[in-house]
Amino acid sequence: MATVETDVAVIGAGTAGLAAYRAAKAAGRTALLIEGGVHGTTCARIGCMPSKLLIAPAEAAHAVERFPAFGLSGSVAVDGKAVMARVRRERDRFVGFVTHGVDTMPAADKLAGYARFTSDTTLAVGDTNVEAGAIVIATGSSPAYPSAWNELGDRLVTNESIFEWTDLPESVAVFGPGVIGLELGQALHRLGVRVKIFGRGGGVGPLSDPEVIAEARRVFSAEFYLDTDAHATVPRRDPAGVSVHYRAQDGEMRTEHFDYLLAATGRSPNVEGLGLERTSLVRDTRGIPVYDRETLQCGSAPIFIAGDANNDVPLLHEAADEGRIAGDNAARFPGVHAGLRRAPLSIVFTDPQIAVIGAGFRDLRDVPHVTGTVSFDDQGRARVMQRNRGRLHVYAEVGSGAFLGAEMLGPDAEHIGHLLAWARQLDLTVAEMLRLPFYHPVVEEGLRTALRDAYAKLDAASRERRAA
Figure (tube, rainbow, N blue to C red):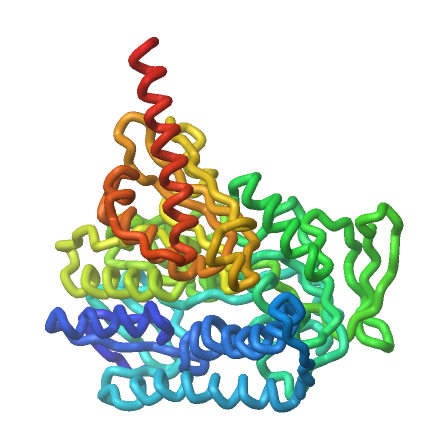
């Protein structure tokens, strides 16, 4: 067995792994990038970009729904083969950018194969033994769904296989109203596919605020079938595709047939098969190594974990940050330090969009705070554009007036979410945010309304505390 020595070994060539490799090299260390699967990152190949490539034509096709309100008329015809051909073509273009970057790396810095730990500092990769000063785990994640669904065969799709379609089907049952299920389900519906989305527990995307969740259920249910607390049995394969037996919202039990079932019930970190039992690492009940979120170090070992593999915040910008932190600390081990973690920001590209910024509702149960609210139903610019749906809640700390976070369903949430994330990272108070400019007429005026509401409630809470 051949032996390769390196300062830093990185397992996985996705967003986090590539960032870790570059950080280690920037620190002046030797680094080895190990990948057993295809290159291209989750974002480019099966995540962020192909999903937006499907959403874009869906939004264009849906625009005709607003025509009558503007005094317009017209129709649209969807060519499913052309839609999916562009999705795959542009997807492959994005993947090509990533693979080109990997191809230009020195050959000595790359090793093809699946890695297994043999100790805290050694890996077996095929017939090669890798001895490293430190190791970064950046193995990503995979779709998680009940194993019984595998009996559906090729009628079961996930976000890792749906983009290989060469045409749009007639019908799809979506299990899971999370980020993936909502984005893909609504896009398919708008492209003419018969879609029903089934959930469990009542949740909608990443939202945790009951009032915003209720608004999301109301808004999305008005467009397509959405049951966030469905009672559905195990789907079955049938000659026509997939049969789903469920309790309809009118209380009746029904069996309905679909061409495909889209499993959007979450993702699971790829940590099985790494041989972690041969290391000194302590693992949680899910088998994920216990680690420090600020340094990404696992215990006191020279092992770091970044990206989707640590099951913290499975978002590209977070994976890139974590990879950089893990790679830099691996290069400097044992001199590890806390890296820059940005204000939390999560966006769902539905229509209306969803955004969660900073501390959400569930994070503030024990924090004295007020909630500033605004409905977009009558917000000026949103109504002009016929996009007046949704609700924004901003949370501010009683006493300090600090802006803590927000949950939003509404127009342009991807842009308003960034403004709020910047405010959170800069530790601004609600009063300071209200001193910033707001143009007219813009959707951001709705944000100002919510901030004014929060400010008034903070003032009332302050008076109550002084009177007590």
